[in-house]
Length: 364
Picture 1 (cartoon, rainbow, N blue to C red):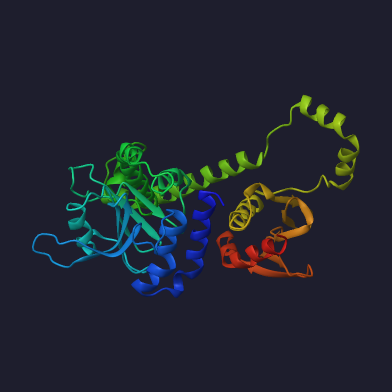
Picture 2: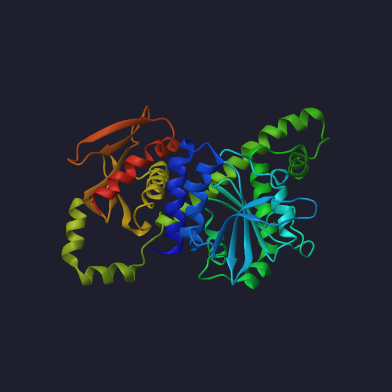
């Protein structure tokens, strides 16, 4: 299994088990140790590689312990401090991590609740842990951009120089992305004024501020939706004309299959953007079990089918979105008997994630 696949598999496991984990010890056993073992590649049961309850006297502090110290060549490389999976991560709750960083050879420190991993180094002042992480990994929502950087921390690919050289850019780009996301979710007064004064020429009164607070939030959401829709259209080739030369080439290769396809095709079928968005959600869920390219779709008059390997004998789900009154997600059992589930929004498809994955597993 490739590194990215292992990372996503752990992310899926964490999403499924998060509600059942309530203590720090359970968080370590279910989330943190599997990350150290299957993702970073260190043997958590070998004290030469991973030291649990690592102890080092720091000034007047005696006998304090850090949860894990990852070792390489008998020296500490990564310090890991754990909190419960339901805890918010703040440096105020990780004072040991801050102190230990300065008295060991470690250049990397991690603060985690098993779901979110915050990685720190000493960019601002040598041998003194920064107050802000250079990399934040959310295993419930993995950012593909970060996967190569996480891999640099693994045992087989550990590259401290490369990590440190890219840490500053990662630190500020990541912080900027989080700040932009926060402003899009709930625009601050400063952001509202910054944007509004570029489109509104009048005096920026309290009434105008209140009016534009609503408008800026609405415009931000519509902008993100437009960006997602454009990506979907590009990924699925919607609206992309087929070059004449390609059509002629396909016909010359296998005119029989083309003719058969034309007989089955109903020219009155109209695939909607909402169906494509629903397909992308089902595909994202199914990708926990199979490679993305194996999940395909076919549209018909009665429903929009999501299939494995473009095989109508391997249905994953059906989207019944043609009715203006109620949308349904169709799920099939082992005997291909379909049960329709009413969904009021596309996000509700995620409520059936395990059913979708189970459908995929049946064909493996």
